[in-house]
Length: 101
Image (cartoon, rainbow, N blue to C red; front, side, top):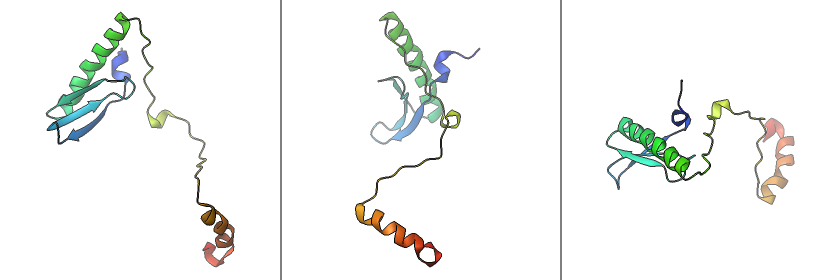
């Protein structure tokens, strides 16, 4: 059976300042870890997740649900973007031009 702590996404990146890898658990504020290697940082992050959850439980605080991976999310395909007014105004003319330019 998969434990709750393994469901939390972990982001890992190199830190020149810390001379190692930092693992951050975005769903759990302040939950992060350090390691000499990416694997070590992830292992330490899993320990940090376990400690974070135990501490939250002992303080009777709400434990955030783990976010779903992007592949599990439903996307409509709609993409909205704000444009400068001049570019927006030029779009219909551009679309009517030969070749769409």
